[in-house]
Image (cartoon, rainbow, N blue to C red; front, side, top):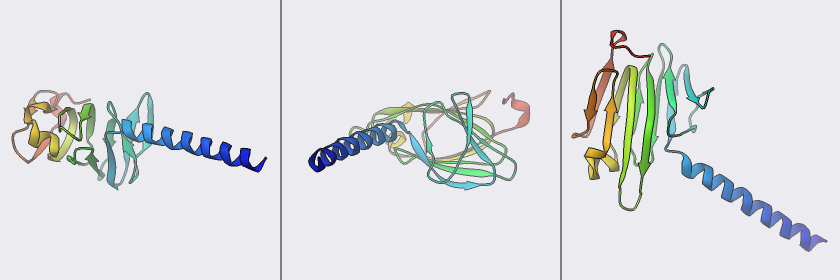
Length: 154
């Protein structure tokens, strides 16, 4: 009986570890800093962002007034979203061996500071940031995007 309980516990532990690993593998980054009111909108729900929260492809990150959030993506790209901003993480894929992949994000409103990571250094043409009126290709190492209220951000 005790042997069966140990075997069952091992199988259960392995299954839980595999589920955790799969969940983590789908995340594209993690929240490193939060100040004020920051929400992650995902599949018709909104959750409060906290340090350690995972972010996923298609997430929409919304900051309130006097709020900000810092996110590190899997390729070590650093995103710093300012107050009253809306950032959509449209697409992200990154191969840790070849550094191939894609990053496509839209800043609908507010400000976003970016320090590019391994993907932009290896394949700058694969990284794109958009606003409601402009698309920015990455050719440098760090930049700031600001979108005013009059630029049709939603």
